[in-house]
Image (cartoon, rainbow, N blue to C red):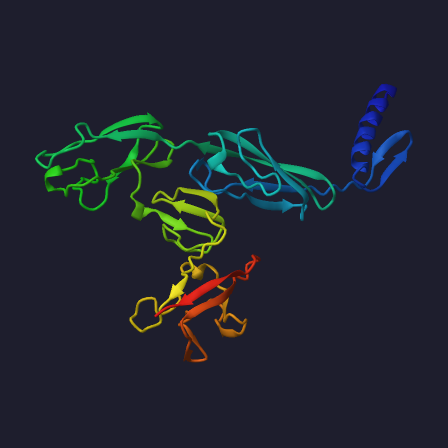
Length: 348
């Protein structure tokens, strides 16, 4: 072998040695001025990453990746990345289409194989914008003498549309395929017409609104009513889902206008006329641990409620009617606040 060829071969193998030796690859043999590679075993690490359902509309909930390890696992040091515009969790790879900019992206999955060698896998993700349009009825409002009215659809983006349909609440006569309404056979009232459609990119959308009965409400306690009442102060989170499975979540901190929500009567008249016979305290149910104690003017305890005040005081002590007089009360709310102290008078 010519001297120049030996040097080239030596430099190439030296470079290979430098690379593989950093990963603890075994046994290299030197001999006769040439580097002879003996046993070289490099265990590769490969994987794939996919997002089921791709491409995604911006109305889709967050999506987690599916990682398939082909060789070299288990992996460590995992991370995920993409370019600006795609909302992605760098530690889990979960993407959020709803807060991402519609476009095509490459997601890179970085990992370290069991042998300590780093590796990557990539996949493409496409985020599609929801189509938009407007709907109107020329001549609105209508008298019942009007024969019919046809909607005007203005496609703003994402057309042409398919799978179109129209709907409204009971009382309005409407053709679900054309949106034509018939005022003459409709009940007088105000209605919301909903126009549902699918854009050219496959994303569904709804305009015109959804009637209140078609919303799903979800509170932290898993209740589903539109209104919560008789609730204490604190943070409340509500998630609303419409018939298009679009969701929105928001939170609000509720503060009372008064530090104490109880409305405490100053007197009772336990004369069996069914009017103020017992000491009913408004909003007492907001304090489930409340305890109330009644004392006479000399400080003797006459009556004490069970926790929650389930049975209001009826002006008696140990079953005996108490005379007309003023009595002291102590209300323990057991919520960290000071006891409430005052007077209640028995009148007849």
